[in-house]
Amino acid sequence: MTINARSFKELSGAMTLEGKRGLIVGIANDHSIAWGCARACHALGARLAITYLNEKARPHVAPLAEEVEAEHLLPLDLRIDGQIDHVFETLEASWGQLDFVVHSVAYAPLDDLRGRLVDCSEAGFLDAMALSCYSFIALCKRAEPLMHDGGSLFTMTYHGSQQVVEGYHVMGPVKAALEAATRSMAAELGPKGIRVHALSPGPMPTRAASGLSHFDSLLQEASNRSPSREMADVDDVGMTMAYLATDAARMLTGDALYVDGGVHLVS
Image 1 (cartoon, rainbow, N blue to C red):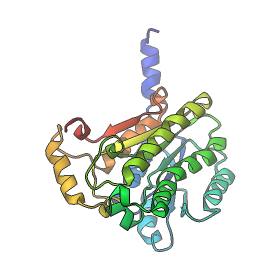
Image 2: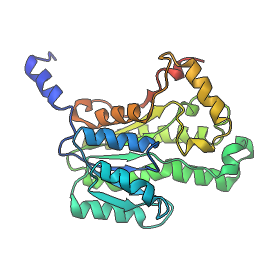
Image 3: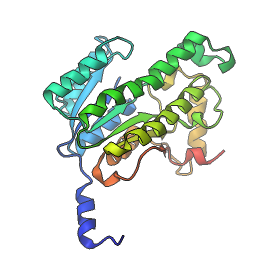
């Protein structure tokens, strides 16, 4: 197909989130990847709903939600029965439609996270899989009926899913499962115009990453290996996510997209 000047003009006009409504899950503070996503989506004109984990977290999240003019600030602990349903019932009643969801949540019990995979407890492994992988599937299931005109679903991964990274332990197989789920849901939801993406940043000094053993050395090593000679930050990830949520990215789905300055390319 030949793309003429008019269609190029239409394509450039599609690089906006004006009028689109999105849910951002996983903001803990202004160092969160989810915060970078919220800022970028706001800059492109999106209307936002933001969640916070609990009342202890709310004072850290509420000012950020105000900064991006979020229309909803809702509690969401993925471990509590009924809270996911409450969030989506609220959005359905208020908006009636949803265009994108960002899932930026990862968890494993500290003892299991810092120990060898072979020593991981069954309970710890199941907790890590439930919070870091299945919760994305659960959000996608609730979002699907609200995506009347298609939409996009996002989660966060790391290249420790593909290679053995010292100190990543149980999260390696968990993120591999998350990427496999992303591919499967992209195939299942594609006929409805719903795209599914996993974004793979390099090491970042987020709250979740602070629980990893040897994280400081991992961060320094990645910085030394980066072909771009610098590390991506949460805003780099956010702008990538926001672009993928626009109609201009309508033919992209199902892959784990690296946003790490090329760190994963260099052994």
